Length: 301
Image (cartoon, rainbow, N blue to C red):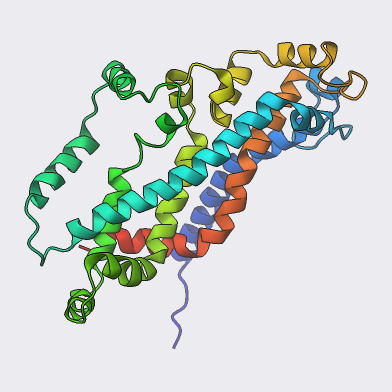
C-alpha cells in the first residue's frame, strides 16, 4: 500500500524545487549573457542593448581571437599544463596513496609522513618564501613552475588513500603470495579498481590547472609563457583589449575591414567563452564516475 503524500510534503518538495531552479538560473543566466554579448554586433554592445539574446549576429570577435597569436599561445600553454599537470598529479598521488593506505604492512616512517602531509595541508609558508624557494630551485620563468609545485595535492591524496583502504587486503596478499611486487599490485589491481576516484580527482585537478591564473602572473615574467587564465586576467582586468585590438588592426596583423565589428567588451566575452569550452567538453566523459568516486573516497575509512 502506497502512503498518500501529505500537504506538508508537497509544500516542502515545491520549495526545494523552487530553490533549486533559482540556483540553476543564478548559475546559467550569467553564462547565457556572456554568450549573447560575444555574438552581438558592436553597436548593440556599445549601447548596452544585449541581455540574454544576441542582437545582430556577429562572429568578428571569435575571428579576431582565432588570428591572435598571443591568445592562441596562451591557450596552448593551458592545454599543455592540464595534460602534463593532471598526468603528474595522478601518478604522484597514486604512488603516495598506496603505501599510506596499506596499514597492515610495516612501513617505517609512515606516521611521520602522514603528519607532514596534514601539516602541509593546514599551513603554508606565504608568497614571498614560496617565491624565494622557487627561485633557488630554478623554477622561475619555466613551464615546470606551473606543474611541479602542485604535483602532490594533499586533499586529493587523502581521497585516494581512503578509496585504496576500501579495497580488500586479501587481493594484495594473494598477489604477493603469487610473486607479484608492490608496483604490479598497484598498477594491475588497485588502479583498475579505482577508476571512479581517479576520474574524480583527475577532473578536480584539470579544473584547478585550467582555472589557475595567479601563479602564471607571479612566477612567469614573459607574457608568452602565461597560461590562458593569466592572459585573460591581464587583458580583461587591466583593460588592455582595446589596445590589443587597435594594434592588431593597424599594424598589419589582421585585416581591419574583417574585424570592423570586434569590440573590447565583446572580445572579453568571447575569451571567457573559449576559456570555458574545454572543461565543459571534458566533464561529460567523467560525469558517470563523479558522484560514485567522490562518495567512495570520502566514506571509506
